[in-house]
Length: 131
Image 1 (spheres, rainbow, N blue to C red):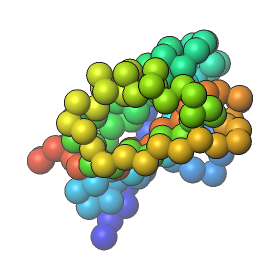
Image 2: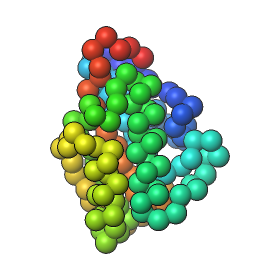
Image 3: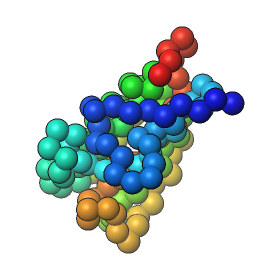
């Protein structure tokens, strides 16, 4: 099966030995996104709500570049620095993932750049769209 790398300047560039996403068959597998502003390259958002918004925007941009979107998500994996942020995170998440994909959400000891949230997505691709 052919694998295609996904790259867009509308989301933060990969800063290590990985890609923003990989298309394999009819699915897109994103790398984890943290709330880095793609223009400044910095974490500008403060608080769980603002950081979740930025993460969702980054994921939407990567999925769009791959011929998909958030409505086509089938699975998300969400990492929170503090499970006390779950309710606020979930409110923002629900606005972006109205299709209610399968999800795992766990608290972790630390995240890159000491952010509050990181997310990754597996999504179907739209018929006829190619990277």
